[in-house]
Image (cartoon, rainbow, N blue to C red; front, side):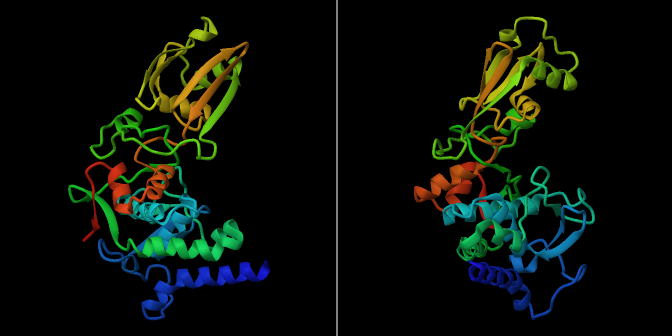
Length: 318
């Protein structure tokens, strides 16, 4: 087992160092690598803000391998991993560079994109490290330089884990319409781990959570009327709901209670409220499990991206 892990670590190190070797064998130091707008992944650099606040510069190809390793299960179909690589590259290309100055982007998935170092990836994958590292390297290499464009500009390539039958319009979640982020069918289902979830809170806990954020909420009436006037998306995702007389979005309720998605139903029994969810994530853009399901149907990464991002073109950013 130790021999397998050591071999995998060595291969991963070679994988992440190979672009440096190909650039003439010079090991780059901070501030040395030029940042450009177009071209191949080996010609680009990323200033990455780590969890401890340090900024590390690395080639875009290395960064993308780390993002795909962290954001999508390596067991997924190759075409799904390619779609993820293009989405991650596009997300980086469209990211505002002033948000984390002097860095371009951070490793917090709640803010930017998650990132996994070669050592962390090897530890996570165990005896499949060599296989998975090669698979992800191939996904990045075979989409080299490609991004998703709308009217010639990199899109907001947002993605999430799994959908409850269809994705959600951006306007329903964030309040602003985006022409390529509209609701589309998504083919995943019960095969997704924890696709259905459940959260139970006491009525007192619920009141405390809501009034802490929305002090005008009134819970003087019967418990079964605390949540009313539901508005749903076709998928079952809650667009709006009145909670204690305060109108909230489904996303606000999801965040408030830590639900896996805004596709939820609620039932009251005694002094408890139970929320049952379907899917995982904000629901906008590309569903990762949906991408894998489409790949299993024979769809290419280009078809997957066009499926979830309406009207985009997958091209190299010049």
